[in-house]
Length: 529
Image (tube, rainbow, N blue to C red; front, side, top):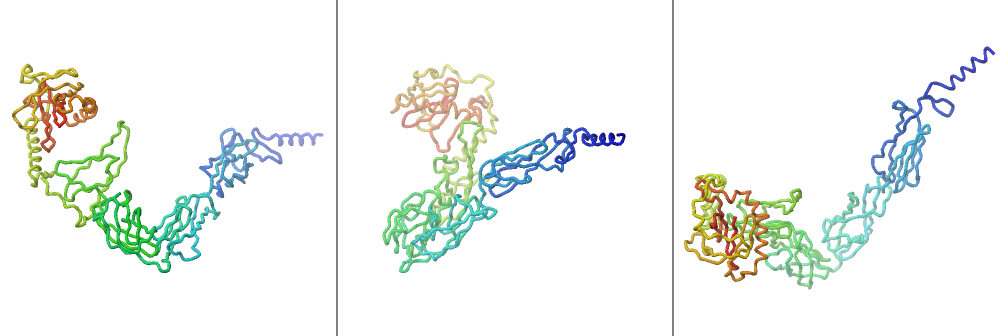
């Protein structure tokens, strides 16, 4: 008994072990697993591809446990299989992958997506192509593991569409003798095939003798005269397909493409007619850009719905381009691209305008037409006046004129008053007395209408809308250029306006304020600040 009892106690001690440790034939020794987490898949898994998940084990103190194998299971082996943490995509869908160690489990969801296209090939044609015939194309798509894929979108492009191209059914249409390269693209991966097309027996190549009108422009109808034209004739202008609307053996009526032609200066462009017998090409003047002729000080405005895409300005000038964002919110941005081309013009291009009067930054002036010189003279006079009188300021004393000597503008809509007005020019000494009716009264403007105007009394809605636009848009913009109510050092109004064309615009004094007046065939209106 003295020998047996210690042996039993030793066996019990070995069986119990230390705290937090496990023993036994089916359980490895070491610290007990307190937590189990799995690494993230890192994105979708393609069919046929694999990814490795790692089981992270920690004991009660947070220390990592190594050397312990986990048991791996999948919720759907038809979607994703797993072995020793290696997951393989089987078919599209989602499956839960679970790892278990010492009764502790953790799982992560794996999404399996179709395999992406890794290679595209076009099978060679079984026979030579003859213009006017069609043959199906065989395109093979493969995944990275060489598995053949199906049900993927494929787009086609021909380097010479007049020779052959692929229709929406995947058929290769041979249209004219020549060589072209067909590219098939799926999911950004492409494959190519060089195709040779022969003319059918007895076919005759076309010829072009003339094209009218003398210059082509986007969207207009044109006539191509020649010979050898057939019903299936195709036409391109500058490489862009033109619609053929009427065909005879000696004449084609076409419509110049309204879009797609490159924006360039007026110049010759290739016009090509293709038939089953061959191709014919001649160069013909093409005007894509909208011609713009601007004198010094002039401008033009286009909007996004107008002819903004392509404009041609005479060479040799300097131009200022300003881009406006018409959004009503200050946080709204608009993207734009501004590109220029200095393409050489042909002899048929419009001649540049006469040399204009320009004042470059270096101050040296070139001479031009009298009205252009007058415009520059006025600008120079305004600059000299500013330098002499100083910057505008608010008046520090009352105006020197007598308010009692002026007829006040009534500040009530519908009221009338007699005022004097110049109808002919900015410098005429004589004035005309007219009766004016108040149409609009605002915070910064009063609008009056000549009651004797041909349309007097019928334009109130338009004048009110115009005044509202002035109050909300024009007046705030005007402040960016200076205070219209400011006075110069001699207590005279410092704000003036001139449009460079001797338009009937001037300043007139009303009841201690100043207004800009305009006239037209419809009557007269005054802005009073």
